[in-house]
Image 1 (cartoon, rainbow, N blue to C red):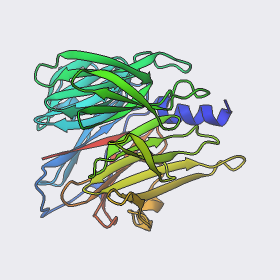
Image 2: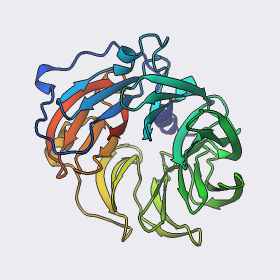
Image 3: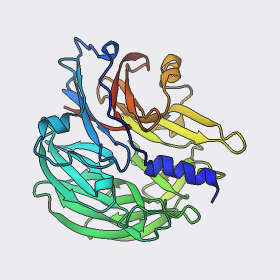
Image 4: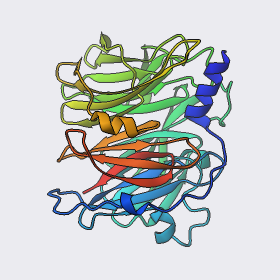
Amino acid sequence: MKMKNVWLFALLLLAACQSPEPSGPNPDEDPTYPDVQTDYQGFYVLNEGVMGANKATLDYFAYATGVYENDIFAQRNPSIIGELGDVGTLLAIYGSKMYAIINGSNLVEIMDAKTAKHLASVEIPNVRSMIFDQGKAYFSSYAGQMQMGGTQLGYVVEMDTTTYALGRSVTVGRQPEEMAIKGGKLYVANSGGYTPENYDNTLSVIDLQSFTEIKKIEVAINLHRVFLAPDGSLYVSSRGNYYDVLPNLYVLDTQTEQIVKTLGKGVTSVAIKGDVAYVINIEYGPAPEYKTVYEYYTINLRTHTINSGSFLSADVQEKIIYPYSVAVHPTTGDIVLTDASDFVTPGILYYCNAEGHLLWKHTTGDIPGSVAFLR
């Protein structure tokens, strides 16, 4: 494995430096957002926090007041020891509850969606991703500890969203990542990310009724993102090997379960509104330059084609140090983009209109990642 590969994998998956205390927001960054016509109350931001520092935090922006609040979980849950925990990687709202994956602490934190007050914590080892359907939550788990060289098969576990009881589980491939549900089937991207010289390359297909793996579909190495198009097609991304195999994106026909198109682009982060996918793509060039390229492109999910141009204005792109995640307001189309900066100090959130022009920005916690809109 090349030293370049080792460094990139460590940065993207296991960044492990100590971080200073986050500074408060700068006065000229405080957002004022009057007269917003939206049916959403606001949005939450889950900040990962540097691994090992136990500093995952939760921020909230309210449309009615135009106020951005940092680290609200600690404020609203003063009795929770350790606060959110270590490495918050994914946030989602389902019904009246909000779910946060705290990967380094091996748990899912469940909160009231409107107040962010703690309801329960569910332990799942090395939990990676989640999806919801028919009152159930499904979580993918690496199963084994965080360590390079791990070959243990991962699994998906089902949870009742009323009782928080874990139920059925099914073994899948190595280091499973994102999932999608279509036609009574759960599709799981297997990465094999702990064995870079022997990545997994399969998509597990689980029958939800029997909760068994009925087949594996070979796609490409190091699978990651999975999302659906309006016509039921499944998009599956490969991260490549961070060296000489480039990231790619594949379109799968869920009727035939065959790959029908290859788009030739990577997907670092993606957000979907209607029939458009907004994608951040980060690619690392070959030696000796190792030039990093950042792209902000969109996909027409009906025609399965990449649109020309960037969804961000040039002046916004120039401000960003390290683009980390993108989210899109479900009705207005406003764009939220987070910047992880140097991964050891507080990041920045950029709030843009649907045309990609900056409306305001704000200092976040360390490594701002997942965003969830509150209706």
